[in-house]
Image (cartoon, rainbow, N blue to C red):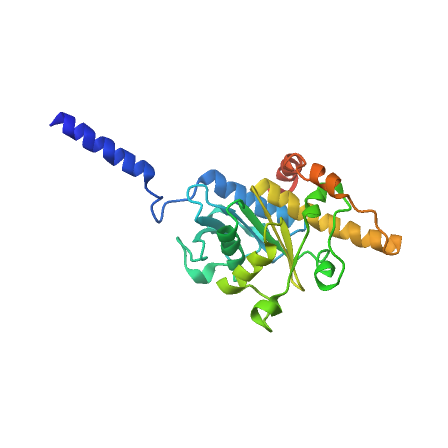
Length: 258
């Protein structure tokens, strides 16, 4: 009897280890804290204002992600974090409390298993590059990842005349297709989306994408349209940086820690 009881217990233990997380279980505290910090950093550095959002894939379950409720990023606390599945249906909160454009995040995570974090922002510096024929290209080594190319999503092709917001999975899927395998995509007349393999990297990419856009516009004005951009090999070598860890640690101390 003891032997069979031990075997039964062993199988039950294995089943518990292999089972997916229980619905309603709390996301990892450290991951939630990092997401709150990313919200504060992106707000403090001017990437996000009252609008825009950042998410992270759930470390317990790659088919779930974490995103704050509908609010300004600078005000987000741990209690505001909502867990979603990849159809952007809330697991632990009411649908009405979530961002209208949460479908951006769910569809990118669905299409890109390599992506662990997503930022959607509306910084004015990037807008001109989505509404003109001038491509956003790296002029600055800190934004060398832009050398992979930055496509432009035209929402009219996917949804006709809209209010420009990604309000459903169909538009989210179209945006994810426009992003493809790139690290960033511009949304015509709306802003940008940046993706990365971690919260630290996506935060750095969003900030330096904004800075590069500002510098590129200045360079175009000063150079009469002639700009000496990073070459492909230069961009490839410079793109990794240090994972933006030095920037993250600085931001954490100066604008993120509350």
